[in-house]
Amino acid sequence: MKHLILPPPISAPGRHAGPSHPPGPCNRRHFLKTAFQVGAVLAAPQIVPGRVLGRDGGIAPSERVVLGGIGIGNRGRYVLGCFLDEPDVQFVAVCDVKANRREAIKKLADGRYKNSDCATYRDLFDLLARDDIDAVLIATGPNWHATASILAAQAGKDVYCEKPCTKNIAQSLALRDVFRRTGRVFQAGTQRRSLPNFMFAVDLARFGKLGKLHTLHAHPGGLGTHTSGWMTPEPEPPKEQVDWDRFLGPAAWRPFNKRHLDGFNFEKGGGLTGGGCLEWGSHCVDLCQWANSADDTAPVEYEPQNNRLHARYANGVKLILRNDGWLPLGSCPVRFEGDTGWVETGDNADIVASSDALLVGRGAKIAGYPADFHVRDFLDAVKTRAQPRANADVACQAHIACHAANVALLLKRRVRFDPKKNEFPDDPEANRLRSEALREPWRI
Image (cartoon, rainbow, N blue to C red; front, side, top):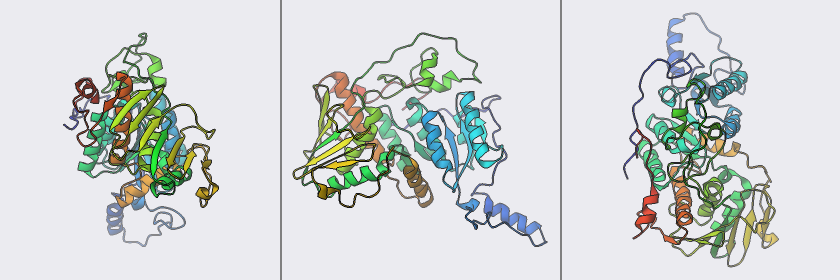
């Protein structure tokens, strides 16, 4: 698999909506050096506030994670709020193709810090060029998720990326390989990996409390696939207001239509998302992968059956993607079944099991699928360089499982998959759907 080859940034006037290196709060790379230089110059004794040194409940600048944001819309704004609530985060810059969103996030950050330091950019290359930024939150449309994440890793940044993280199998492998090679930290926005009810249910399956595991059920949020198409052309706004070319990025070109900016359009084949079961599936299939101790593989067989998708792992465990027949436990439900018991849970944080004995020690109920635990897991990994729960390898495999399911749905037939070679054996028609052509000048 070839790696992503991306065009270099081009220095030109007017490429961004803010200064390249704006004045801002001291970051952890330069704090100690600056402090030493200042100390050498000033002969008189200085009184340093305790909060600067990390006392009085403050966080020393050397311990802060300096964060930038790329494509911060509705979901991104919520996740950014989780980051801003962490005392060791300093948010310094936002990039967005929409002027109104750039200004909205700047206003949010400046209001939080009581200053005017948050820089705004229209082009992500300008934000990634800043050497004071440690990590980026990527919450663009899915057409940009993989490409922006790879660019960020190549620029030396750690990445928290919303899902779905990739549009096809090829992108999943490229994402995984780049983060392995660069040693950067990646966290997919599959925050249910960090929520107590889902973690408890997964542990019941992984550690044999249900007996020998035989069936996993995931809510895909939809099993339809749509080919790429154009909406009715509308007048394109000025680039400073909405940069339509940058919004499309590597996706197939189409004329401007405001509806593309304000919602998801689930498409395969050069579209703006990965289509099919990726929206909820990237959460629910991910949890089933984890429950089956299958974070390093994917099912080997996929078959559409009566508005469901049946898959099978090499160890014999079945995976069923279905939209109906769930207990009333909220969105994003999963169910794990073994020879001696079963468990089901969802976003209202209730857990139902085949016996009350299985629920002993279940812990606190935290409903509403908050992202703060997942954000904290990412920040801890940035500091320790450990792997977070939804790292690039984990996200790659869960997304590949969804992509392979989408191939079966699109072809309306059974397909076999080799998770070691990441191909469909003796199936040229399915193999052509492992990747898609990208718009010039983007390449995989």
